[in-house]
Every structure is written in structure tokens, then in C-alpha cells.
Length: 167
Image 1 (tube, rainbow, N blue to C red):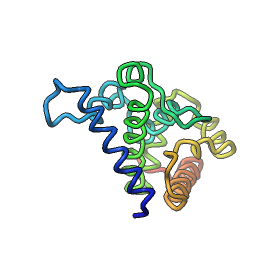
Image 2: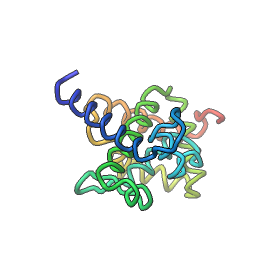
Image 3: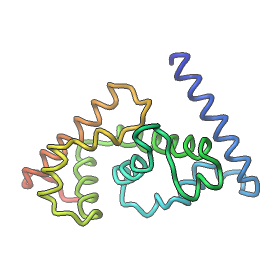
Image 4: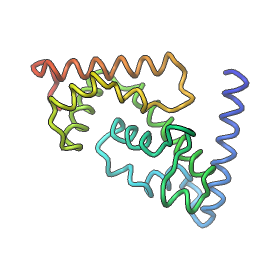
């Protein structure tokens, strides 16, 4: 681990402890991450890919700051952004640990959830590659590339429909 990543991790941990302090009346086992996860409704989204897309949509493309109406109002911009960034990183890590067949299933679930024509969506994802903007900002290039490869392979599998696993 480089000193920069260690510094970022320590800074994030201190910001989380600060956010935990603001939730003072919560039971000890409930962290700020768990509370924020529930508060912004991530548990209602069908899978981690959908959650990651949602979290990326909360991130301002110019500043990299995550903004959520309720969390930002209650915790302040910096603490809410740090908290949402940590959740985004955790979900990304979980996706990286997934098998390719999980990516295919999660893509299928996302298509159903978004109520978009699958042919149109897959075509747009392949040509626009908007999924590249969904990775957390401080992600190392190798992990981003693995994620992109998994998504691109999942898209290809779904385009060849007969190869898609039953999910």
C-alpha cells in the first residue's frame, strides 16, 4: 500500500468515525455506512451493479463530490461525500469478486429494473461505454480494466442471447 492510499484510507476512516459520531444514538453495531446504505434505499435495488450505477449518478462529474439530498443536508457535503464514496468503493470491490456469470445475471436484472428495451440498452452500452464512468474515482487502472472487461463480456454474452445463463 502506498502512503497516499494509506492516507486516503485513514482519512476516510476518520470521516466515517465523525459520521458515526453524528449518529450517536444508534446501536454500536450500526455503522454510518449501514445507516446510509439503508437511508438512501440501496437495499431496494436489485443488485450491486445497479447500486454502483446509482451511486455513480450521485457523483458530480466535475468535482467528484457525491451529493445526496438527505445525507448531504444532515452530514454536510464532505462527510456525506466520503460516506457515499466508501459505499461506492465497497460495492465495486464486491463486483470485482463476482464471477462472469454474475455480471451477466446482474446486467439482465438491471435491464429489467430499468424497463428499457434490452437490444437498445445493450447497443447503447456497447457504443457509449457509459459504464466506464461508474467506477469509483480512486480506483487503480488494473481494477477498472477488469471491471470493464467483465461488463463488455457480459454485454457480448447477452447480445448472443442463447449463451446467457438462466438467472
